[in-house]
Amino acid sequence: MSKMSVHHISDAVNLNVLSDRRFKTIRISVNMLVPMENDTASAYGILPRIVTRATEHYPDYTQLTQKLADLYGATLDCHVYKLGGYQGISIFVEGISNRYAFDQEDMVSELCSLLFSIIENPLKDKDGLLIKDNFLQEKRQVLEVFDSEFNDKIYYAQKKAQEILFDGKPEGLNRYGTREQVENLTLEDVSSAWDKLLRTAKFEVFILGDCKFDQKVFNRTFASLGQHQSYQPEKIDTLVIKDVTDDMPLSQSKLVMGFTADAEFGESDAFKLMAAVYGGTPSSKLFANVREKMSLCYYCSSAFDANTNTMFVQSGVETENIEKARKAILEQLEHVKTSNITEEEIQSAKLAISNSYRSVNDSLEAMENWYLSQVFRPSVKSPEEAVTSIEKIAKEEIVSAANHLTLNTVYVLKGNA
Image (cartoon, rainbow, N blue to C red; front, side):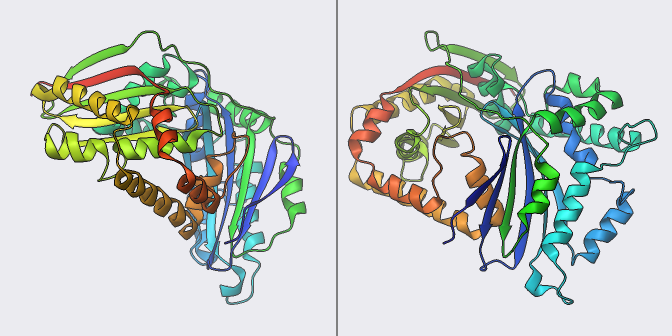
């Protein structure tokens, strides 16, 4: 399997390249990472939706769509995400590789040209502002995202628990800011935010798949953009457990428990394996006992986030079983802390994680997400290296990781239907 190579265009811009002839397609993406801040989250969050609607070269959606069709049905899309305390704005194109083009077109150059036209020349009006109609349409769609997130109670409860645990820190903010902030956005706000984003973001550019490229093209576009960024999560107060309950007319209550980990970056593998043994697989403590044997939860699982050094346990429970489930979840963690875990549980967890890591190489998007998630780590592992690392972890390390967890937040979305 090919390994990602990194070319430093500047202190603020990395070009990440993985050439693999197994794929018939190419993926080129521009990821802009900025500190998650309450004042800028909403404007930055809406921007990629606006700038990918039209450019100076393709001044309306019809012309842009026709260009994608001419490129053998290429795809242009964007998304907004969080990476620790950072907000990520991604714009990407995907298309077929050169060897499958009928007339031997240079598809890498064509796709780069389209993507760069968005970065350099998004469509603006005579006053230098982004197009008002595009802004209003995308503003409405972002507000609909808030509605959908609220209606998805599993997602809502998880995000609420994160907000409580991080208590005003960047890691707890919504990727789009708040609904009120989006409603109050003006065209002037987002137009000036685009220029600021290009000046201040850390750029992670990816080119993946069956492709050859000319780095000079990327140098010309990105060498003068961005600003160097580094990230270290802030310490979280662990002296007091935050216990919050909200009532809603639901048939099923949600119980989310957040734990902080006393870990440094680069020490996350043992915590990931511990979380899998505890609640990450069908053979885990939480699934086999709390869900199956005790029948206290409709679902119950745990996951560790290495970029924030936190672990969250999510569960759906009957309202009358909330306290029983809470007690049982903590009891199962105590079993892990006291080394009451079997070799079969450990091997099942290792196998599940290893299979998940190996599957990363089956998708260009998955490979990009894999390496992007390690941007702020002191060292970067390939999926194969991560598999080797997981397989070497001993039972004692799993137990030690569990004993470095501290319960910080208990959030209950209590159904009263």
